Length: 279
Length: 267
Image (cartoon, rainbow over all chains, first blue to last red; front, side):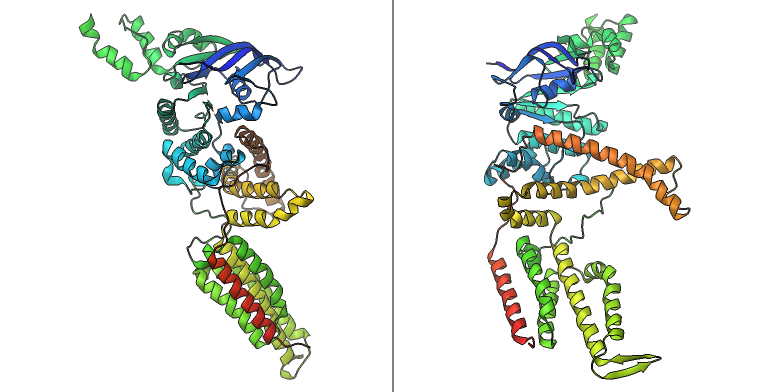
């Protein structure tokens, strides 16, 4: 049974009266247990969507409904219990003096009792693989580790949706891999919906569905494979197409027929080495 | 990058002094600072010195860390001693040097005042050596709680302190990065006249401030996203607890005070 967890109904938003619209009449729905990737170039409105979901911003037109509640000034604290958010800069969202203090911060805000807090800290740090760093100070952690702590802090309040707002953008490739692995494991185990916001097509392959944003409007909405096959158009709206996709195109041009649009190196490899037996 | 960086001068340990509740330590030091000024003879100074030295020894902080803390005040201690030597004209003349006469009273006064100084610095640095800044923050928040009644923002003050402490290493790393970046663009921080060097700090400070403001804004947003609504209805993970050991230490300290007032000379 899946039902609509997040619903945007004709939402429009701009930062000021004289400013251009950042979002124009956007409508979409996200179900529980779903992993949706929102992708778009800088200024396409993708981060604004995240802030609207969390009630950090409010739309001028249309309405947003989360877990059956409309996002307004009055419901915002309830909404934030449902929606956890991890931001881009690992340093600027680390509030506590140590890892465990940071994980506790969200729970402290909600008046969770001390015993429950200690239990949840152990649980969530284990879930992101950071249990050995409970008393470590932030400046001794790498960017990827800090982001994992940020994810743990969000999980500690058991939200129904986790938003990663370009959470990997400031990390090195190994940190990026770390986070993507952590996230996909969590999604498997905990059954929470996931929204990853990114400008890197590489990161959308694991998602169930991809929403492509362009100039404040939904440009396309489909499964990753279908999105990947439109690489020419994607490049036109300012997105980087991964190397495998380009290679697959080049192979097709050279007359090598590949059965499906490859999402990663392994799929392409699989296709290529079985090619001869198929033809 | 900066793994040796320690905020404050905390020396990790598990001694009795380390394990004391920070509130106990702060309270005792507060009163110690007062009673130091009541000592006026050998036994009363003796009991104060005994207390300070035995806390120092039980803390098991290496002497060199304590001495490092005292470095900036050695000059002051010696200076007050010499000042008293020259200025106080009580008691008998002990010896003459050139045009100066040194009195026995001056020597005694000098030693007494320097001892006071020494003791004050010793116990207060013992606090920072055995207590993490975050523990001190917690203790201050707890001890200032009565001020909540007169609308003094105790929780906000404590949160401000703990966030500042948390960001010190971050901003230091950033300063290092910016100063390298500017040095690579030809800004010279190390040589030249003082005026030039002060001017060279400007291209360091401006980007640092800009980024600090940006950080503050993002941090505020992250805190809000995680449900921060001010101090009301918040629970706390870190807990302060008065244990038997604290009561015991209070008891000893009261004993010290009693001995002090019994032995000091009146009138």
